[in-house]
Length: 275
Image 1: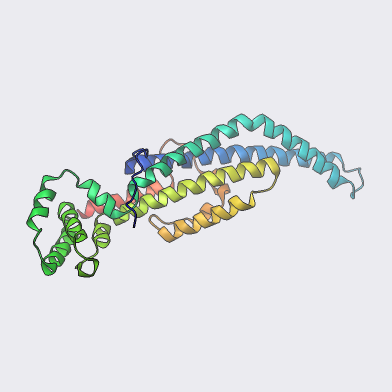
Image 2 (image 1 turned 90 degrees about the vertical axis):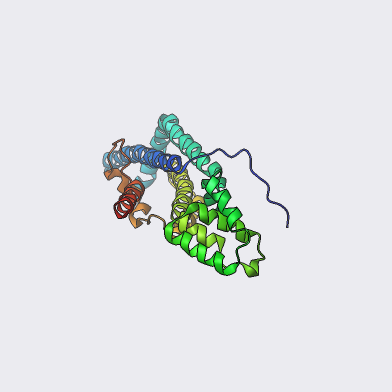
């Protein structure tokens, strides 16, 4: 099996950076969607106006004339709004690109645990102390580390069992690291998937405005990403989120009022109270 190759060009983003970037993506999508709704409303009003002005025309010929008028007005709106729409989609792609590049730093809870305890003198001492520990003692210490949320001990134990043959390992390093960082790993994993979905939704909405039709391939990709978010299930998934029109009811406040920030804040407050 070939040795893994490090991706040295990946930028670092902390969990807080990822959350704030996702909030910016959410705000961008709200603004972009609002712009498209306003343009669509103007288009609909124009169609109604043309239709009313052609009441004297034969009913058989009217749809064709109205269709041509709407198509011409759509082209005018597309040109008029091109710069504003492009600014939104470019920012969306840039923000999502940052998150995608940082995903290499959040591959697994084990990776996050080892990085978190890197440089810890206590971890180094613990590694020395358990160097000769047998399976029974290692299993007992793993249970203790999980129960006490001792990250240094957990990291030392993960290093120790990595040196053992797979069949002789008394516990799973991935499972132990999951106790420490599993929830955070799921949250960030879902955030990365959601960022990708929202970019595709923005591009799809833009295409639908320009052409009057959604992009079939993007629609399929969006559906697959939604399913993936539901499978991860770190902070829930609102079925109403499938209807971007519901975002019209949201305010333009600078405060992070989306379901992600609210849900995570409530969970952390609960954890703090328990502590």
